[in-house]
Amino acid sequence: MTFNMHLKFVFLIIILSFGESVIGQISQPLRYEIEIDNFTDEYYIVSAKENGLFLFKEMDKRTEDNESIWEIIRLDTSLQEVNRSEVIINNKFSFRGYSYDNGQFVMLFQEGYDFAKDLLFLTFSINSDTFKSYVYENVVPIRLSEFEVKNDAVVLGGNVNMRTVVLMYNFTAKRGVVLPGFYDERSSLLQIVSKTDDDWIRVITSDRLPSKRYGITVRAFNTMGEPIFQENLQAKDDLSLTDGRIINSSDGGNLLAGTYSIKRRTETSRGIYVADLERENQDKIRYYNYANLENFFNYMKERRKDRVLKRIARKKIKGKKLRFSYRLFVQDIVRQDNQNILIGEAYYPTYSNRSSGYGYSSYTYDAVFNNTSSQVFDGYKYTHAVIIAFDDDGKLLWDNSFEINDLKSFQLEEHVHLAFLENEIVMLYLFNQELKIKVIKGSELIEGKFTESLKLMYESDEMKSNDEELEGLKQWYGNNFYAYGVNRVKNLKEKNIKLNRKVFFINKIVVE
Image (tube, rainbow, N blue to C red; front, top):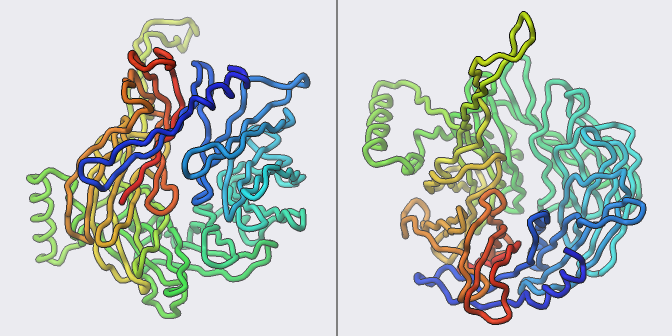
């Protein structure tokens, strides 16, 4: 599809108001569409919070010198186009990632496929329709895994020779540095944290101890790469700290929360820990076993849940340790009023058998029919999400859960999101064009799980197909979210609307 054809469809992307849902809590007032063909890649979407959304993708056309052309679209919160532009990228660079902070959207390109050599940054400001480019002549070829922007700097994390390396590039100084203290074979990168109340960047690593258990190290730097502080955390007894997410609160200082396991670090965990980094004594870490949470097992059917709870009660009477192991993907911690809220999504990997009628003889190397088979990874299946609230001292306030049981994805990512009303919390996720919703008040259930379909553009639209692998739901700003994906839509009644169209769409979701 040519750029001129894109422009024609821009005028057809009319914002349509939809009615509120039956319960009056969820509304879908706006939808944005771009018609695409079968060979067009989907758009990347970046939330600019109250400043709207950035959409971007590499276009099909190229320059005469075979350079790639990227299209960048900015929408406001009414899903109206504010700006549409194109940028040309030297063909030695390939797209690697993006980040947004404080009015600045940054795209990252790297030279090299697996390991980054020179790095190219494109920065877009919401206060200007222009962009700036910066090239970092990297002297450390790195396999990148993390990328965050903070004020006038970007931080990149990854590994070199299986060892953690963290780089920083400052746009004001136009200078890049390798951050000190990371090149260690016992350390692995967990997270780069940029969204805090201060001007520091925090880097969280998992560190293997001489006892073969695992601890957590938090290092803070300013945007010039200068070290501010370092905090090392070790679990009690024979426990390991599996991962960690940090929250910076002006009321309660720095809190770190995540999962813990027994002895050596494994893929499964036994519970949640919360640590106060400002506390000096040995009691800075609190542990909450999954079995001691009030609503952790609510995702199970009643009979199975009753059996589990009875088994927990018997073990407590006998003084035995409770051993429930779960894989839990922990999201960033949300600060709401005087509470810190953690969401963890429980999952397990699935595999499928792939068979082949042909193999090879070990003697003649000729093809023979031997019906070989192998197990192939088939995605992560999610069971439920647990939501835990704790105060600024790390003390548990309440817990709740949200059964999932229909989601599967090939990458671990956030699915369940929260909207905060005056006295309630709305939990929601998207599956196959349907919003799955549950309403709670602390540990209480207010409204059981129910669904609401995504609205289409026009009243006479009919969805013919949906690409489940491309759909998603993300938090936008406040209690506003956006759902996105690719649909095939049919319309038999509306004049001046194509009979069949394939669209990339964004729906605005409002919880009120």
